[in-house]
Length: 131
Image 1 (tube, rainbow, N blue to C red):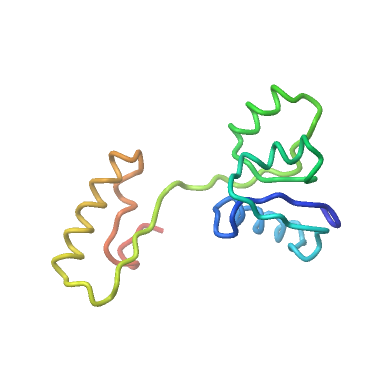
Image 2 (cartoon, helix red, strand yellow):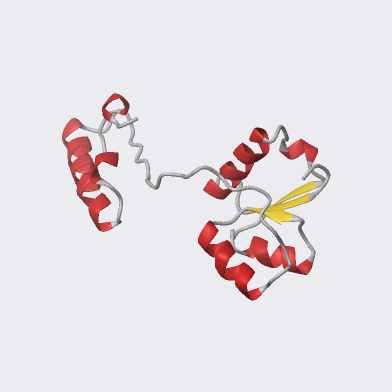
């Protein structure tokens, strides 16, 4: 990747964090690349590859499988990340009343079920969260 062009979604995207981690693991950083272009949609990185606008991008394995089946020989996998757990984090103001924090914690604890997440990911204090 050294000296190549990388397409990534927004800078605070999980895709971008994964790309940074994978580059670091390979002993590289964004500064080692010719350019890093941040755009809005992760899946558009595959289009950027096929148009020759980027040399690499980061996508989910299922997105890659579907795209590569329709675009054989256009690109290849350079690296695959370690599995990434799903989940979300809720942050509230420190001065939020305790009863409101409790209600939010209870709601998010049950909301995880409807979102397909494991309920044990919802916790009210960092020390109570699973490792």
